[in-house]
Length: 111
Image (cartoon, rainbow, N blue to C red):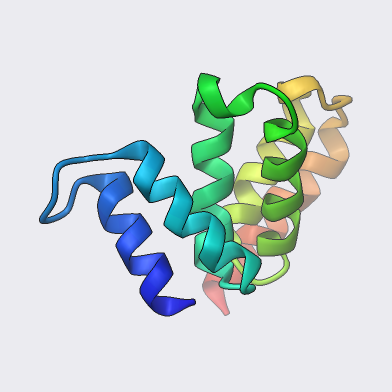
C-alpha cells in the first residue's frame, strides 16, 4: 500500500510529475483499499473536492474512508468533525458532536 500511496500522492499533488487527479485517485484508491490510513484521508479529500467523482457513490465512499482514517489520523478526524459540525455534504449538522471530534483531533496531535 505504501508504493500506491506515494505514487497517488505525487500525481495528486504534482510532485515530480504533472498533476493528474485521475491517476492520483486511482493509486490512492488502491492504497485505501489496502488500509493505508494516510491514503484513505487523501482519497476521501479528493472525492469530496472532485465534482466528477462526487457523482454516484463518491460521497458515500469519501465518508467511508474519512471515517476509517479518522480513527488513527488527526487530520481526518478534524475534517470529519467540521463536516459533522456544519452539516456539509448532506450530513445532518450536530455542532456538539463535531466540536468533540475536533477537540479529540487536537488532543491526538498533542500526544
